[in-house]
Length: 318
Image (tube, rainbow, N blue to C red; front, side, top):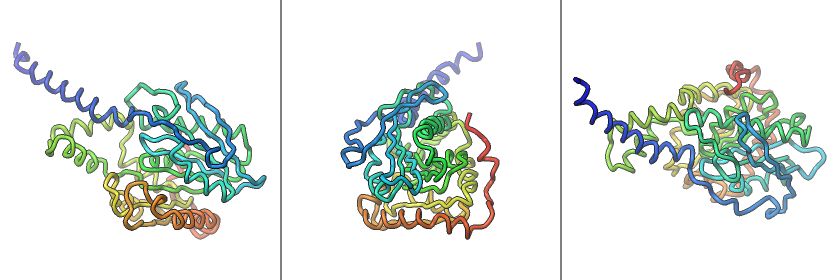
């Protein structure tokens, strides 16, 4: 009987949790599908369309674009940003294909034309399964992918998935991170709560952060630190705008200065917002990326022996 007075409190708490799930957490898993308006042939690139099933049986929609040359420079794997689709990265694909690279573009589950992953818990951790099944299918199409190696290119939240996959792929050459990854999750949620509710509610923030831990499926900030360190001796190139308000440059500067190991590069783009570096500085962007890729071998040679935690490479995502 002594619990009866607490029932309204429990009901109120349940209501708050449901509100947070609908208002915030669903945005991380079901951001709303965007229409794929352009395809590779709109950019003059012949392509092979395919679908592959991940370990949970969800169909992942993808494109494979072969390099024009019989001797490609390598293969670039694109991990699009949250809420986008593979069509959004086609402007980047074009200049890299012109430079002699094979390309793999795909839609994460719950995005574009890929299937729906209805399970919330561990959703962020499972996204690596989408990449694995797509790359495995692409390997059956072209064995030069494994021979020449893979460059992983991530955008915003897609940087997280790109880093995690790069550390588990034995033929990763390098990693390019555009406007990500987000690191200070507490800061992002604090600003999100204030923007939506108009004030800093500590209770709402704590409940929201707890839900995110369930959604991620791992200790996010500690895991990102480990994954970034483990990339070495593979080169990593950070690209970030000084006016990014979605993922402020402090996130990637912290990772670059305190956790990333050589070889590494950082391009701080002036007067640039989130994911707009290529749009506002196209020539310089493409020149810097191609220059970085052309120097991969020398960067690895100069970095010496691997210094990252190689155990991460051997650990598969569950």
